[in-house]
Image 1 (cartoon, rainbow, N blue to C red):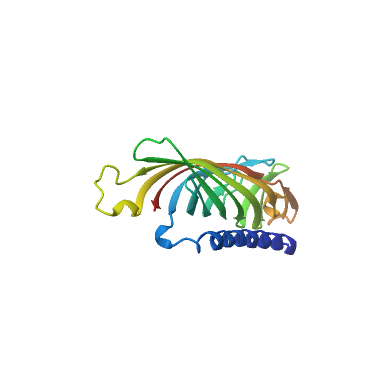
Image 2 (cartoon, rainbow, N blue to C red; image 1 turned 135 degrees about the vertical axis):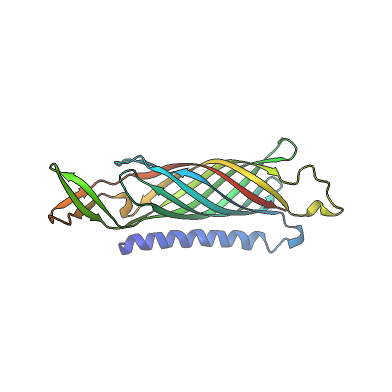
Length: 240
């Protein structure tokens, strides 16, 4: 990876980490833990990173993630998220691996049915994706040619957004005396999209490779940039 590219990725990750740290340093110390309202959750499900501007539309993948928030106002919570995902391109035989994380906001939706909660989620983060080295075969002038495509990496800023509904797993169960402030567990369902921009890295560039049998060079077009990534998640959350 070029030094300039690696340096840009490191600076972006450090900046996001500093923002997350400043957020919690500002909010948490001034509130007694017993009075602090928070939530944390884990979720997983299918996600497709749709590729634009290249020679692939992208394949279905998988994503899983963690998120946590603290109450800033009665209906607004702020915090952070982190995810791991897999994705692919239909002209590649390997699986791409991705990591992302950043700031997250959760706006509670009013007027939900009893036992249910709803929220609109919005964030800003940084995503890193890596494709491992793989061997491929292409037809060059009608002759099957094998070559090795070196590993590539890329990064981007992303805006994750979604609608979440959550059902109280203990709805209808009588509460014990004094349990009004206890932790509530819920099953969650989320439909959303990650919108990416400011792509950078070799993963999004054309690549020149050398045939292993003839030694001739061949230019591979980029699979494209993952600008939109719709997802559907199921998970559990814990709310206080």
